[in-house]
Length: 214
Image (cartoon, rainbow, N blue to C red; front, side):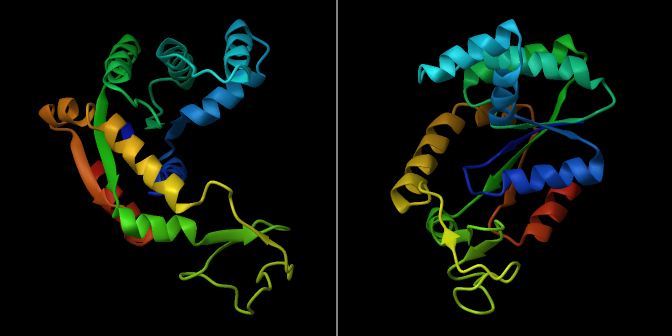
């Protein structure tokens, strides 16, 4: 079974993809992870990706599609794929259909994790982590038992991601809407789009996705 997980940054795609990998034996194909992996490889494609990223330019659709193609060739037909962060445009969606057909595969589901923008801003801007062990916390939803002291390791040093700001989150939402809008109608015509409340508890979101895949 091959699926696309859609949703803005912070919607929980990574968490749910990891659960699908763990529970269903699927493979997560994240464009970000693949770019980093390809960049490290001593191959012609790896050197090309490295040069592009070092120059600050965007990696082309053709290169991203080539990475997807190579991954599917290595996976074998018995392993389902979770596409995370791809496709982002109508052109990439067309390329994905061609790549899947080449490997005798078919897209089964497109699952969008829907979020409330204001709630997502609160979720992301309030999160922070222990600078020593990486344990995650939140100003509202998960504070340490002892204020200012990490529950896991006792450290008193904490950090935040520099891009976890309201301005950045709202910009990401705007970009997501502009990128995703041209993709969904085509999939909706094929009757493979499902939507899940991404603001629910993690287990609830997992159960909803499992129900779609059943």
